[in-house]
Length: 283
Image (cartoon, rainbow, N blue to C red; front, side, top):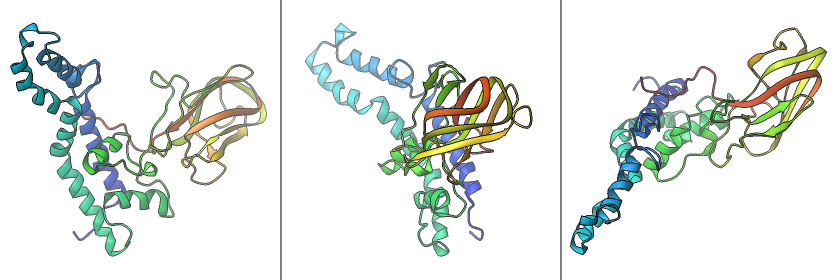
């Protein structure tokens, strides 16, 4: 390999591997995939175990039959099927990607495989967060390595919507203040701090200050300032980046939002995925 793999190339392959994982996992809407307790393969395996246990089919209420099927019922639990699918379908790509990352050892001795590559380009390098991986990466890495990845190498996006109704925090100017979802800092680095709003109003020089926690769980603040009616400060805004008080701080939790010269509006603080990256999906 004459040219070393780049963080952008690692992101491209990593996102596609995460998309493959998403396809294996499936969705409750389709009913296909590994699934949750009430759908997909997981439900089918629970139903199958109930049959051979005699719980839903009396013809299996026989000791000899139950002994015959018991080992198979236990070995084929859905969680094990998912791990097997990752091991056989994703492992080769993962290992090859890791080997490519390991070639950096000739120039960066601490980078010997995929985990140290991700840590270097997210934490150690002067340019932070170049190689954050999608949330599903945690499942892939854990299945193949037997341990979770460093949380500082995996982002989690929290957007206002059906999944996260209040995002990280919902603030109605002069009204209710509603904490939203707190990102588990032992699992994820969080996301890039953003704020969006509807029905906003204000006057003159104005500002927004968000208090919360960064990727390390340390108290942190983020802000946005300008002039109402100019630039980003319009009635509605679908999302603008907040400026962290400490350079390169991601966001995981919000405890309060304060306003100066803003008199109305419903505001949501969000953690967003890295710029230019899409949600990993398989067409």
